[in-house]
Length: 325
Image 1 (spheres, rainbow, N blue to C red):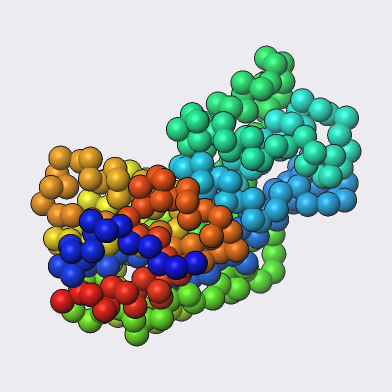
Image 2 (cartoon, rainbow, N blue to C red):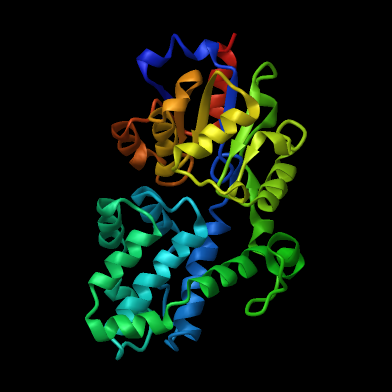
């Protein structure tokens, strides 16, 4: 896939003074971590919570893309809760189901996420969609079984592992033990390609502690100190424009490019521009599509308004490095 830049952007890119980065899918490859954990949490809860026979995957890691493209699922805890919500609702509707394969056959992940997107995206709209498919008595059964805090906790335990759960999330694992999936994360970005004459910032859905681990792994802690980061711990989330506005306040850029890989990453730039206070600083959108379905989604992001679409972060950094004055 070739790098695409909107023609009207070519003249303004040499003047940018900041490159702003997402973490997942940009700085680190999380295909074998967050996506796999989401699928494994759903499988664990189906077999242990719903007491189903494990005879096949309930949810595949690559199906996380359906939720990401629906919008509002930048946080992988929310995404996993969205997966579990549909699975639980279908089990409540069909209590005679005995296996994960049977339950999967009842879960239309594509149709479910399309409905969520139509409603505006996010976990709250996923819950609304789920409740609408249930009869009143079934809703009561769903409400009694639905435990998003537990889903999130199991995700955290599985991701961090015994070694780092306490330091990342403040508690010792109760339900899942062993090595954490975070050790499987690999670095995507070539830090040497970051231009030296621009500011570098991070806007991510990770917590502050998770972000520190990611930047340390990528060798970027010195280049991107805490004062140049906006994380989940700051209390603002993508796709809200306020998240990008906070990063602008922290590092004071006048013209930046935000590099992300999901619909929420594109939306945060667009929402920032709609804020009255954004007039003092411009920000352009860049989407990198390094996953196996990258080329498939290129057209979707272009139609949604992405100004730059690149095959990976290093391709866009090489391009920006060649044009920035």
